[in-house]
Image 1: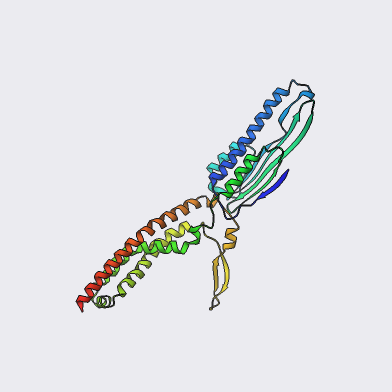
Image 2: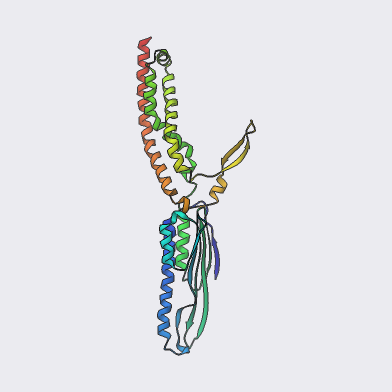
Length: 314
C-alpha cells in the first residue's frame, strides 16, 4: 500500500489531457464492474468453498462535483453524464472535485481459501490555476496503475506555464510593434520631407531621418499592436504585486513571478483558450520577426536616398 500526492506546478494541463484521464477512469471502472457481474453469475451456483472472485464489487464509483461560475453545481455519479457536461459547458466550469474508488473483494477457493478486501482511490481537485491529486493505491494489486501512470506522465510532460511567450513578452511586443509600424512610419516620415520648413533639417542632418522614422514607426506599431496583443496576453500573464514606491512616493507594481510558477494553468473555465492565445502570439511574433529585417533594409535604402539628395541640395 502506498499513498502519494502529485503536485502540479508551472504546468499547462489541457482539457484534452483531462479528457484522456477521465476516459481511462470511466473505462477502467466499467471494465471491473463488468468483471464483477460476470463472476457473480459464474459463482452463483458454486458452493462457498468453491467461489472464486478476482473482483467482487463492493461499491466502486466515480463521483464528480462540478462548480460553475454562476454559483450553481451538479453532482455526477455517472461518467457519461459528467463528460457530456464537461464537453458542452467547459467554459463555465469553475472547479471540479473528483472522487474515484475501486472497492472490491478478492476471493480464492479451496484449498487455499482466502478473502481480502481492497479500497483503492484517486482524489482530484481541479480549478483553473491548480490541480491537486491524492492517491491511495495498493502495490500488491495494481488495478489503478495505468491511470496513475497516465496522470503522472501528463503532468511531467505538460508544457511549461512560464514559457518564452511570458518571459520574452517585452521583446515580442516591441518586435511586432516596430515591424508593423515600419512601412507606415517610413511613408509618413518621407511625406514630412515635402514640408519646406522641415525638409532641410532632414536633408542636412543625415541621422535625423532614420531616427525619426524609427520613432514614428514604433509609435504607429504600438498603437496597431497593443490592443490586439493585450487581448491575448491578459489571460496568461502573471498578476501584479507591490514592489515598493518610486522617488515620488508612487506605488510600483511588478509581475508576481513566484506565485505564477507555483501554480498551474488548467484549461477550463476562463482559461480554456489560453493555449490558443499563446499560439496566436507565437505565430504573430514569428511572422513579424522574419519581416523586420526586410523592413529595416527598406529603411536603410530610403535613408541612403535621402542622404544622396541632401548632398546635392548643398
